[in-house]
Amino acid sequence: MIVDLFPPTPRDPFGLHKTIWDEIEEEDFAFPSGKDRILASYETGGVRAAYVEPVGVGDVLPDMPLFLTNDLHIMTPLEPTYQAAWDASPEELRLAIETGVLPAPEDE
Image 1 (cartoon, rainbow, N blue to C red):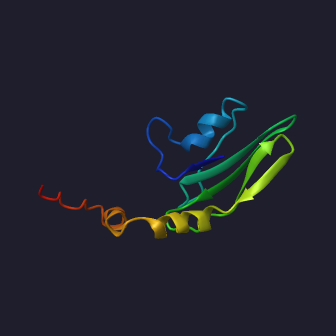
Image 2: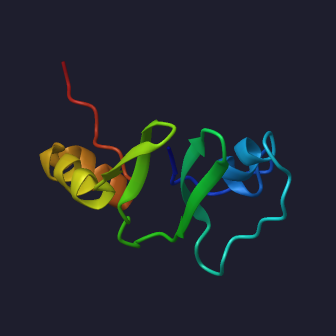
């Protein structure tokens, strides 16, 4: 599974999923309007399949399958997991992420 929450770059203009999936099968891919981040999970057994969820900034992250074997997966609760990690983060870190302003260094 990949959780690609960074915007596309010139190196991978269609995100990591297309870069990975093109190694298996080249297919056209375009981001839906306003959703240029990708969540993808891959089944690699007899039938290869990609389970792809485009998301936009601020969207709630959906549960995604995580394949443990070719025929067995568990659903991963991405949004609750992200929220728990965010809530446990130090306030200075959350403010820096939200505002883009790093805290001033402390005098030693």
